Amino acid sequence: MTGRFAQSSASRIAAQRHRCRRYWGAGKNAVDRLGRNLLEGLIVLNDLFQRGFAVKVLEGIAAGEHTERSLILDLALALAEDRRRDIVKKTKNGLDSARARGRVGGRRPVVDDDKRRVILARRAEGQSIRQIAAAVKVSVGVVHKTLNPAP
Image: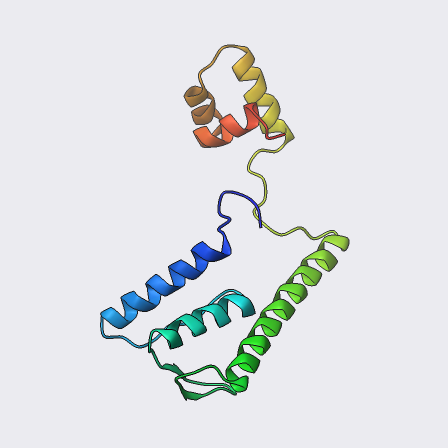
């Protein structure tokens, strides 16, 4: 995982632990997931059990209250990770096949070739970005993006 939103496994686990403590401290007993993958889930479960917490699974094959790791919990975590991996794979395959058929998702560009020419010409004439944005009826950010395209 790269980019500014990337987090290390340890920090994600710490965030989940903090979330668990916050829920339990407030008198609630619910957490929607223990981690993003099997390893994180197992680490969080082990930590919770070592601290004396019981984990209650509300539905699925591991439904019930657990005070220590068991094969059924490990299996439930593995199945959840596998299910998540399948969803990601199917989504990616669907997007790839749509792209192959000429369908591209996302918003349509605000600036077409005509607007781009007008923006560039007005800037060459010395108009300010705000004046250009008002005249072409686009945002200041769109004008900036048109004048300084990403590499």
